[in-house]
Length: 119
Image (tube, rainbow, N blue to C red; front, side, top):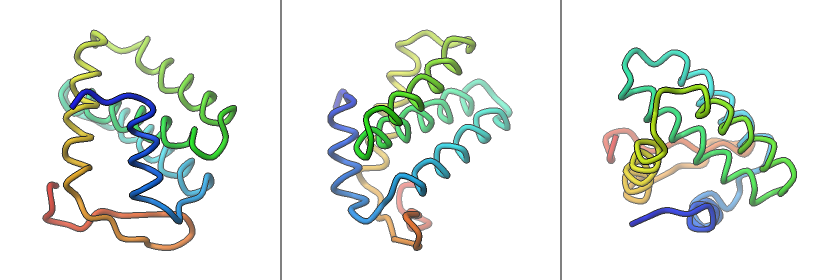
């Protein structure tokens, strides 16, 4: 499936009904840090995909705030060695994995996927 911002927002709304913007901003910051901690280019593009997915999801709460985080994700991408096709493929691959996962609400707007299910 080719993902779009709209499809990711819809998935986020369905999968994380009790999420809130603060929890998602925390998640964005975690993914942002993981991008810089990645040891290989493959890990880096996967983490960048996560950054974009979370940024798109933030848009469901507040478009202006979502655009701020999408811009931050775009800034990371524009300084990366990846072609857009590489990032798009990583986003599609990660979303296919996410769509198979079971997520558990862990409080305060945070969710965590169950270990062992499409890790």
